[in-house]
Amino acid sequence: LPSYRAFEVEMAKLAIALLAAPAAAFAPAAGRPGLAPLRNAFGVDATYPAFLPQGGVGGTGPMPGDDPMGVMPWEREAFSTVAADPAQLDGAFMAANGAALDAKLSQYSAAQRDELLGKKSDLEVLGMSAKDLDKFFNPPPPKAKAPAKK
Image 1 (cartoon, rainbow, N blue to C red):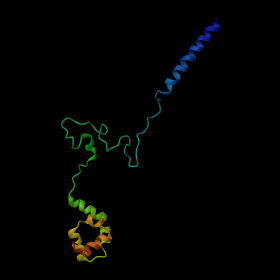
Image 2 (cartoon, rainbow, N blue to C red; image 1 turned 180 degrees about the vertical axis):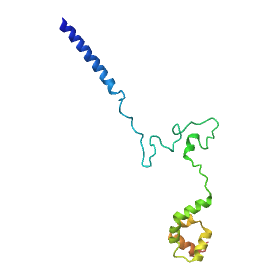
Image 3 (tube, rainbow, N blue to C red; image 1 turned 90 degrees about the vertical axis):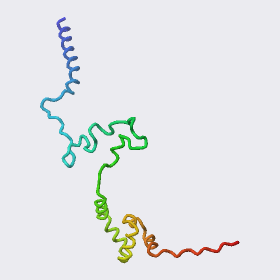
Image 4 (cartoon, helix red, strand yellow; image 1 turned 120 degrees about the vertical axis):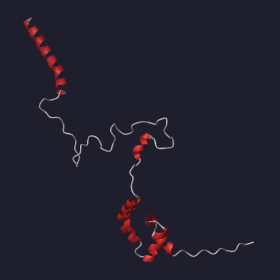
C-alpha cells in the first residue's frame, strides 16, 4: 500500500504541473523588456496614424439638425478646410506648369501669346491641342450656305 500512496502523490504532482504549464507560458517574463513601439522611417510612432482624429474615423452619425443634402458629420473629414490665397495657388500652378505652357506657345509670336492668354486662362491653353491653337489663330472660313430650294 505505501507504493500506491506514493503513486497517487506523483500523479497529483504531474496533474498540477500539466495544469500550471500552459498558464506559465502566458505569464509575463520577469527579466524580458516589453516590445519597443513601432517606428517608421521618420522616427515617428507608427502605432496610430497621426492624420486620424483621436477616437477613430467618423465620430457621429447623422444628427436631427443636419441638412440631408449637405455634408454629413462623418463626411467632414473628406473635405479640405485649408484656406489659400488665389495668388499663391496661381504661383504654384505656374511653377509646376510654366515650362509646359512656354513649350506649347513657343511657335507663336509674343503678340499672339498675349492675345491668347488675354482670352483664355493658362489651364485652358494647356488643355488645348495644337490643332485647337491653330484654329484660334487661323479660324476656318465660314461655310457658304446653299440657297434653299423651293
